[in-house]
Image (cartoon, rainbow, N blue to C red):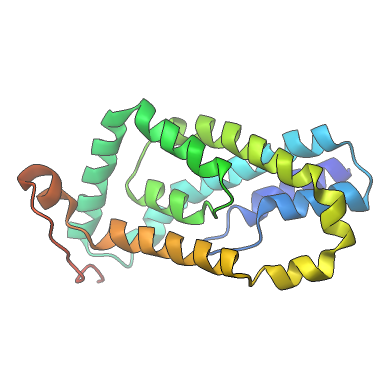
Length: 195
C-alpha cells in the first residue's frame, strides 16, 4: 500500500505546472518514514514521476494555447519540429539535464509547448531521473534526520538560482522568434505573444 503512495505522490508532484517539491524528497521521506525497500521506492517513484511529466507535457500546450497568440504557438511548433530532427542530441541533452539537480518543470514546459514527441524525451528522462533520484534517495536517511535544515535550504541560493535559470530558459523559448532565427539566421525577440 505504501509503495502505491510513493507512485502517486511522485506522479502528483511532477504533474503540477509550477515549481513544486522535487519528487525525490517525497520518495526519500516515504522510504525513511515507512522503512520501505529503496529499490521499489526508486522504481515506483521514478515511474510515477515519469508518468507525471508525460501528462504535464501533454496538457501544457493546451494551457499555454489559451494564453499565447496563435502565431507564437506556430513558432513553438516549428522549433519543436526542428528539435525533433536532432534526435539523439535532444535525448543526450535531456539525459544530462536530469542528471544535475535542476528542476525539470521548465524542461517539460518547453518540450510540451514545442510539441516535442514525448517518446523522444521520456526514455532519457527516466534514465537520468532514476540515476539522480537514486543518489538523492540513498541520502534520504540523512535528509529525514535533518528535515528542518533541508526545509530552510529550499530557499537556498541553489534553489533560487535553479528557478531563475529555468525561468530564463522558458523566457528564451517564448520570446525568441525561432522561425526568423532558424530560417533567416536573424536573431529577433517578440514580446507580444499573449492573447
